Image (cartoon, rainbow, N blue to C red; front, side, top):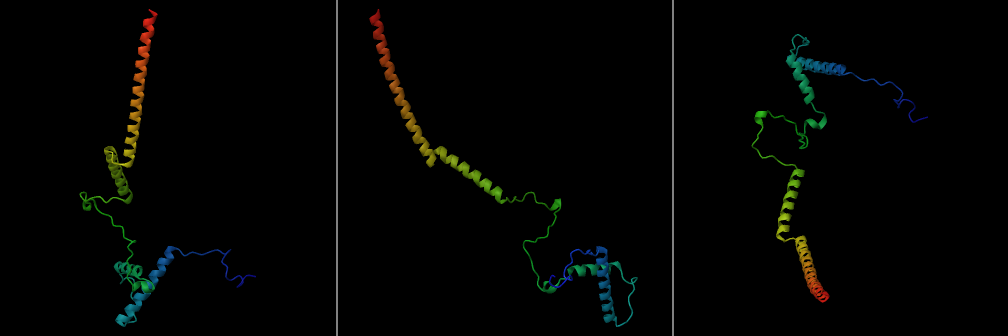
Length: 172
């Protein structure tokens, strides 16, 4: 048998929920009792005020007081959470169109990345980067090889054309 018997378990039973109307009625009843107590203390009379004497403004104020009432130490300590900022909507007339737009972190990083890329391309075209220097050295080597190959071709062409003329003159 479980500890404490069957008393501790709520499983299997039907749960009962209070409706919002009942909660509002209870709150109003508590407020009326508090007003009666205040009225009796202030006037010293044992008479109970009727609902005709109360206006709707007073009941609205009571609801606001109840919402502002804080439990425990919360009423004594005023806490401001910087992360909890009330959203305030602005009217179209209040918007400042001329004010500079603040960029998000991603947008700032993207702009910085583009600027860095442009700067690198300028340096690369000027031949000041390591990669540009390596490319220029490779190009110089390739040009030299091509020039050497072109010279060899010219020499071979001269030799073949000179031999070709001699062989033709002998045949005639």
